[in-house]
Image (cartoon, rainbow, N blue to C red; front, side, top):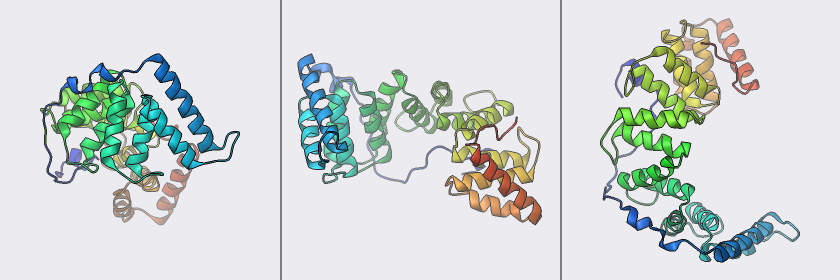
Length: 299
């Protein structure tokens, strides 16, 4: 991370160095050969509904084992939502031994039937190296599938891959294109990242007011990095009138939301403030949280 202002702003992803491969993913591997008949789907749906009744104790005693047995039957019958849920169980180790390869297997079965959520889960596994080597080309394929079906989380993640040049040639214009599509659906991660793009003038024309607008939108949804970025912008007078008390306020809100860097930013700025100013900033942070972050920031 460089020492420029843009370098101070929080980027969406950091990754460890890890061996990974980038084979070209063919759509043929997710062809329609496993689409199930309507009877199979209805049977699988009924099995899953029964499973949920055992999980939640509806008209019967709760039994996680009965839930799991029925869920497996539903997944094996070809019901995509059950396959997705079973994949999540194996991914997290909930009620079964944690097994990423089995999770991938069930996600792939659901993805073959067009489950956008399954494609997103597969993308995350390959992007983050969750139990497998990094494979950004596969992550790109899976995110692209769901992004083209207008899933905002996939659109944001596809934008990240274009932004960083992982699994695809770096292209900031395409990155911001997908960030915008995701932000249009009120995705806070995308709004924050789009604000950074406008601040840097990367993939879009530099526009400090638009940067402030998008980062403010993300902050109003309780986004920790957006509040961190607001603190920096108020401290430096970028898009807002310079105000150290408000900068301290937004660093404090970001800290309360769990942002890892905000405490050091807040404490460094606190050396320049009077005790009464710090008290005022902390009261403002509390007030903002009480309002659920709505209407806290004026542009």
